[in-house]
Length: 326
Image (tube, rainbow, N blue to C red; front, side, top):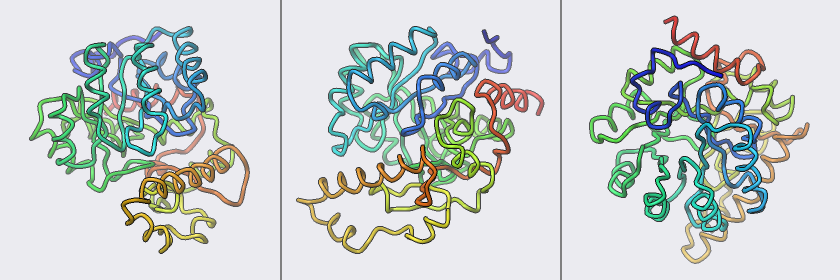
């Protein structure tokens, strides 16, 4: 059982979801599992997991039911809303039917998601990387903007947090959640002072005891630093931040000339991107759970602040304690 920190009694995001601390454990492809979600919720934060972490709708529903059997705290689901996700419509229908608390949309237009969630009272938070897309999702009725900055892990933005949050804050009245660059209490405080109502944190929680990634992956999160994070276009058709392991250095970070040419073909673009994404995700899956020299470790520059593997509840406790003592 958690007790509400007086620091966050008036925080609008905490009020919106009824949580103790303004933190989302970010949805992490392949990594987020029910054990992590339950621990996060019981630690006073909220969390979301990618629907694509489950191969079938039956498994997806089972995950939601498992979480609900262990806790009544609010959690969400991340939906990839572009054409590369052939399961999108089924996943959205399941979220609507089962009444998840919120949906995080990524990599596409959230129009249909917002339209269908509004009558059900399901909140929709939309990933954005710039002012232009933020305006689109605000006009569509998003409940919050998730500002994905250049310090994020995975599919990062191009604008630093210190520029992106004030820019969005000056233009929109809806809540802004900062994604990227937070792994310490000091960084949490900085994000909130910039105008964010909450933060979305991923990389830090990958180094939890509950995280299913391999021991080699966890060791890499500790041994490498911010300077070792690079972006690669070789894995998903969209630039992805990874640790610059010897294997990444060997294969390079740029898409091949053939891939670039095919992606420019309007008729083939969708299918080429599907193929690149599928092949890339298989490579990431192998690296995530098995010892292999072909290592693609997805992470953000906040690995600089990861020094040990800890229970997830201790990660939250330490983060909040540091914040409170600043």
